Length: 324
Ligand code: PBG
Ligand code: ZN
Image (cartoon, rainbow, N blue to C red; front, side, top):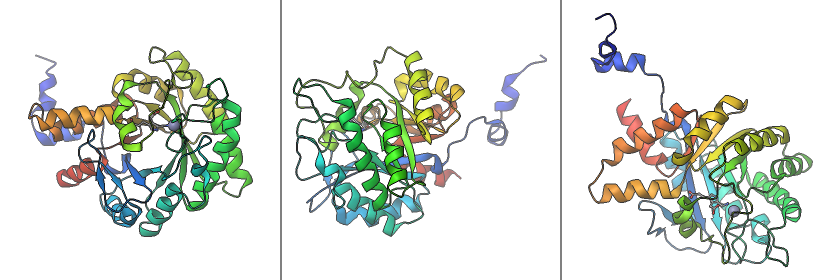
């Protein structure tokens, strides 16, 4: 036979040489949850292996992340007090700002991304301020987002990552960073973030479930892909340095389409529900965790993602180091 594809699958060395997609620890970003006034780590029941962390653990976790060779960490803060505006989000001494400061101090080379949103900070759990009608007020949220971004940059964040899907959020944050002396802080935009049932475990971890209603008036409809291209156009025009698709597994077509259309680097968020399903299957002995995680992360890269935000980051990075 002239064509025998199996010739190039015969040995590990040949397969290594012809491999099209590679996964490195440096592609991976680990989400971290810091909770104010916590004395010890508290496991998140729906996310085995993930903890709410006290600020005192920040330095240690930062050093572990650096040693694993991660591309970075993304910091979420859970404040002790919430209010209608989510004013804790721009407190210069707030929990996220303090966590960022401590991570940066312990591992200055580590890339630190800050999640820039209000849902952990508002008493109603929405990603912005509400009108009397209960709707999220887009433009009133923008000024406040700009303040949050600047406070995170001031604390030392290398990138700020607006996740609330407000129209104009990238431009408002870019302008806020530039006018407050942080022109070099990057914006990682949650460009195509869908209203997804895969976020359930995260809302336990971040204590950010909306008290009433859902997020469908601001997050995207999972049925839409062309709309993601429109969001991409807007985010790039507003100055996004990195663009993102979220969640990952059910939206790999969107990853591929955005990779083709985007000029900026593309991230994918392998979200909490995707993590928890793998952990649950592994706990039952139904699937092999390590192989499944590496196959899944490789799939994101093959689909076109440059960077992967994933709760598996630390584990996967150590597995990759072992295999190298
Ligand atoms: C909040 C936010 C969410 C996630 C990241 N930032 C959840 C939501 O929109 O309710 C989801 C992350 C995950 O599920 O892992 N702006
Ligand atoms: Zn939010």
